Length: 262
Length: 323
Ligand SMILES: Nc1ncnc2c1ncn2[C@@H]1O[C@H](COP(=O)(O)OP(=O)(O)OP(=O)(O)O)[C@@H](O)[C@H]1O
Ligand SMILES: [Mg+2]
Image (cartoon, rainbow over all chains, first blue to last red; front, side):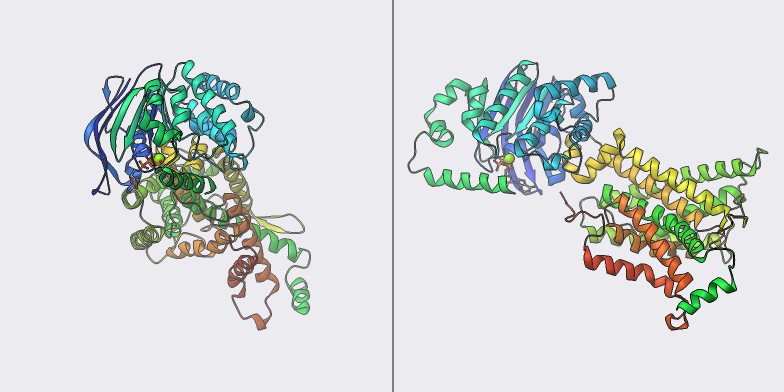
C-alpha cells in the first residue's frame, strides 16, 4: 500500500538526515518504526505526508508510492485526500478551538456531510471522554485526552493509512496501553497503521512488522515477534539489560520528559 | 470645564442631548475603526502579517467604489433603479474588485515572504503601502472623489439626537458584517482559517491548503477595509475619498492594540470604545487649556492606559504562538 524506496532527505540543502531508507506498510497491518532520538523517524513521516518544506527539507533521492501511485512530490492536501493521515508528534491539536472544531478541521478535505457525520460518530464511540467535551476548548484537556483528539482528528479523514508519530509520548503507562488498544481497534476497522515509537515494547506488542532506524538508516527489519526477541532490540529499546547502555537510556529518558513538560 | 459643558448645551443644542450626540457620532466613528481593525486583525491572525498597507486598502477600495459608481456609472448606465438599490450594486461590485485586489496583493507581495520574520514582512507591507498610495493619489488628483451615495447629508431628528442617514446605514451594515464574520468563523472554511492561524503545519497536515486560506483572509481584510473606507468618505466625515482617507487606519490603530492585536472581538470593542472616547473628548474637552485637536490624541492615551494594565490588550492572547 505504501512503499518508500531509497529515500534521501536533506535539510537546509546540507544536512543529510535520511540516507536511503526503504520501508513498506501493508494493507490491514500495523507496522512499527522504531529508533532513538534523532534517528529520522519524524523526518520519514514528514516526507510521506509532504510536510518537509516547512522545515526546509527536500527529498533528494528515492520515491514514495501509495497504492501504486508516485506521490513523492505531490501536495500534502492531495495525500490526505488519497487516504494518508498523520497524527503528528506532540499531538499538535488546535488548542484554541473546541473539540468539535478540531474534528471539523480534521475533516476539512471531506466535503460529504453524511460521511463527516459517520466519521464523527466513530470518533465519539472510540473516545468516550471526547463525547462529553465536544464544545470544550481543546487546550484545557489532559494530555491523554489531547492525544485521543489528535487521533480522532486524523480519523475524520477516514484514512486508509494512518501514521502515528510517538503517540505514547508523555503518557502514563495506563494511558499508553489505552492508546495501544485504540490503535489496534482502528486497524481492525480497516486502516493500515505506521506506528512511529520509541516505546518499542508497546509498538512491537501490537505490530505485525517492525523497522529499526539509526542515524537515518534502516538497521533492522522483521516480523514483530522476531524483533521483540532480538537481543540488540531488547538491550536498546526494551530496557531488559541494564549495563553500559544505561547512561544512553537516561539521556533519552530525560529528553522525553522534557518534551512532555514543554 | 463644567462651564464649557453648560455653554455647549445652551449655545448649540438646546433640545438635543449633548451626550447622546457625542455617543452617536462616537459609535459612528467607532464602527469605521472597528471595520478597519477587524480586517487588520483577521489578516494578522490568519497570515501573521502586520499589514501597514491597510490604510491603502481602505483608500483604494473607496476609490474603486467611486470609480464604479461615478466614472463607470455602473449599474446606472444600464439600469434605471432606485438609487439605493443601484448604489448597493455599485458597492457590491467594488467589494468584489477589492477582494480580488487583496488576493492579488497577497499572492504577489506576501506569498514569497512566507516563513520570513514578522519584521521583514511588515517592511514589505510598508512598501506595498507606498506603491498603492502613490498610484491612487495620482489617480484621485487634488479633489476628493464623491462616493455618490444615495443619502448625501440627509439627517433624521430623533428628538433627543440628530443622526445622519449615512450613520444609520453604517450601523446596519457594520452589525451585519460583524455577524457575517462571526458566522464565517464557525463555517468549514472559517474553522480551517482559525486552525491555520493557530498552527500552520498542523493545518496542512489536515489537508488544509494554507495558501487558499491566506487568499481568503486578504480578501476579507480588503473588503472590510473598503467598507470602512467608504463610510469614512461620506457625510458627516470627509465627503469623498482622498489620499488622507488612509489616515483613518492610523487612527484605528489604537483600537487594534487596545483590543489585542490578535482578537477579532477585541477589534470591534476596541474600535467602538476608541470612537466614543474620541467623540466624547471632542464634545466635552474643548476648553482652550486642552488646545485644539485634543480629541485626536485621546485614542492613543486610552491605548497607553490600557496597555499599562493589560500589556496584551483587552482580548489579546498572552503569548502569540508561532510555529
Ligand atoms: N528542520 C530541521 N532542520 C535541520 N535539521 C533537522 C530539522 N528537523 C530535524 N532535523 C535533524 O534531523 C535528524 C532527524 O530528526 P527527526 O526529528 O526526524 O528524528 P526523530 O527520529 O523523529 O527523533 P525523535 O525521537 O527525537 O522525535 C535530527 O538530527 C534532527 O536534528
Ligand atoms: Mg520525532
